[in-house]
Image (tube, rainbow, N blue to C red; front, side):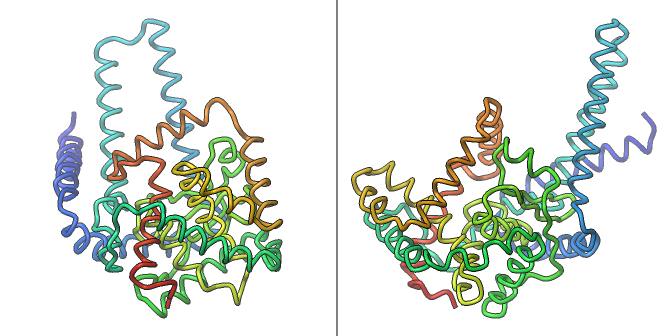
Length: 362
């Protein structure tokens, strides 16, 4: 190994150790990374790649996947032909460790450290705690009443969301409007795009994702259109440094709420998403308490629920449960001990928000 390569190895190892140590100090991460270094990194990424009309990050992922697959095929071929001596195996192991180390440093340095920042509850001064069934029922009732009011206007401009640029511009405008009231929501130099892997995502089960290597927010634009506004704002929240899924859901909901005068269909997306989380949670706690809400569902909402369920059944496959299991482990490894259930933890945040501020979102 050359001196130059040794220096890179030492540099990466030191950075990896440093990242791991810093991750144990949320206040340090919050001050120096999430509110210091990361906004500069994110802004530079969005300026660099935001103007490109397609997802640069997806092209990067595809290229890396092809490269890894090619390397794996070559490795297996040499094993089969018994051409893999100890020197080759050692070199392969060293390259694999180097690749994993590089990805770890880049992932955390470019975005991943945000998993270890202080909770958004401290910024919003919320008392987030386990909530009672009574509080959950009250939240569901409030959301159900809102959906009932919007039932007749939920289709007003829904078809326009099929034009990706309109959908993304609405999400950007929502954050910029909210940012004038609270700098916590300030969002400049937008970079939000349709995923090139949307159809693959239908089988895997993802609605959107954030690419930390290029700073792009991706949205699956082949899922039912009424889910896409909430997803778009959720991914922008990740882009702004709110890495945990419950926090991104909270940011998305608070951003969209109050947008009804401009776009009823846009605001409907947020209430529909929270309704589904709350209804599922209440049903699991006490199915008898949920029955009145099911009976009171308006025709439009009921139709959307059926469409969502039909979509999920259409793309059900034996592989996706294993992918979601792996993703759950990923979430738990990044300070989200509830795994996939972290998404629905937004209910606790919303109940805490309602207890403190009511439904005033200004």
